[in-house]
Image: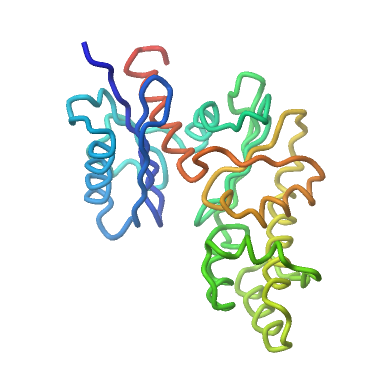
Length: 267
């Protein structure tokens, strides 16, 4: 009898992320813009996962979905909340140097989440900011456009800053105006980007400080790929902040893990 594979989808409002696991190991991942038809997007991603792993559709035992538009994915056998998916995902994605994960900082495209875990990696509490783009990947994207760079370069550039510019506005619209003003003042782009990261870290860290934990802090989401932002969190929280393995796919990986447990009737 061949070994079974499990698929997780994280259907966000901007991107659909997918992950394929077997024996609690990540075999393949994929991401595509959600577009106007997320069902078609998920089908294309599933085909990509199958091709990457050189398997057939019949090798997949269970498909689980999480995220903003999870309930519309017809190919999913079941759905799970984002918070629960992230808590399970960190069991596979936590880096080796992190131990006893107590807090997840998830910086997504449209929201940011703080998830507090107990010693068994069960969710104790969480806070989500989905009302304002400040503190999210969208904020970084908007500022990157103003500064004529791309979102994948802002972290590297910000680390070259020698005098970060203060950005005080908590609203992305007003912060955007602040950045335009700094550009007009001929401020260095690297310093503006560093100031943006500091501003984001301060905002999100306010949510994190609600929870007292002795465990490690791990970043997930696309924002975890931004080294400048991760360093800003370390400076603000005055402790190590680790990057998860496959950070952008943590929710999808968690959904796949839960799917495996459901299929084997362990959950």
